[in-house]
Image 1 (tube, helix red, strand yellow):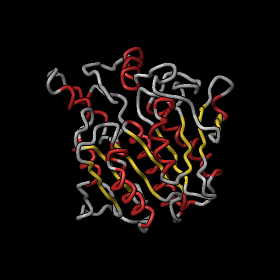
Image 2: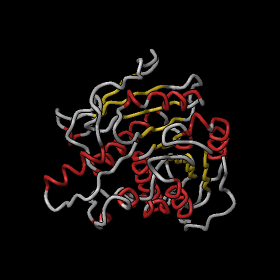
Image 3: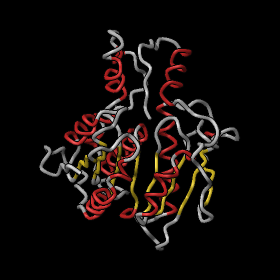
Image 4: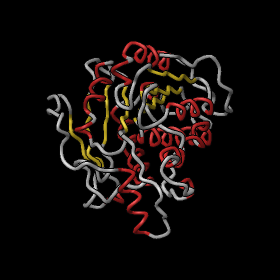
Length: 299
């Protein structure tokens, strides 16, 4: 769930801190609907030299039953930590994937300061390095992001694409899946603010999460999913991301889907769309963005 309280000037550190509080809206403790993880889920602690002893990234690694199955890096959105995300992680695992899911520093059991755009990007890159060890085959590694996590996933995928272009070698990932996400945070803020204030909120947002300017740099197959009845993030944002992305790409609109239930509501279409992503040919690292075609799917 992404709710943006708008109208905040960000001219000083204190107000920027408040902006980050309102963006991430961290709920402490365990989600009320969480009933524990299966015995075969391994709990990991990821660290980087810059963390020292006061910071860590808490992660779940849930290997698939099939040995050497494709593995997904799961990047969640705002508010809920991993305990509130388990239902969606469970659905991805049921599709036959191994899943590495992380809490950004400041969420759940991950120790650290209040998250920022920069810190969640860093956390995703550190988690990706661990996924590279857990699943050494680049053709079997995927990135998934939900809501705000979709912007984190786009940033990571775009960086992998730029790195591959510099090295003139294939991207070290099979594909990107983003669900219920947006073009950039300013667009979401402006959308929410349009009925509440005349302030130019687009220019007051310091945390950009600017996926629309990065998605053309992604050089792997892309699947964009959105519920047609999403009450928090308009489906038009996913349509805009689809238009800006390179081929191969697919937009799956789930009829009646809300911000959280598209994977469950659109089960068959979702499964087919992921299979198509896995079978799609990766674009050249030197490819340029192509116009959208008829791959847009109604559900």
